[in-house]
Length: 143
Image (cartoon, rainbow, N blue to C red; front, side):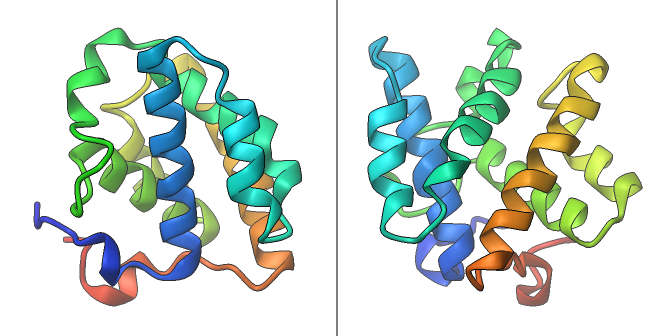
């Protein structure tokens, strides 16, 4: 899997990764991520996605074995888990549930898959209403 630089992501992808990293830092510091997520999303007109992103990440972090896949939350490159999350969101946006499952399977137990789909659809719908779309595949990051 290629190392993907943050600066190569579009705005929607960058915003989502910023939120993922806020959530991971908050989790690791045992603090509530909601206020920081709200600030990150408010200026982009998608602050109502705060709870959805919190639910999405909470479903992923129920699997404690994955913490090491997130790497540094200050890196200029995406971690393995962040890359899988972006690919998952992209394929849900494209309504390709087979491929979305391929990328999320290593991050969550099967029982959380449907919840992640619903949460992702909410995030995608609200991001798209303000002109934010995920297009990671167009950059040849997906093999």
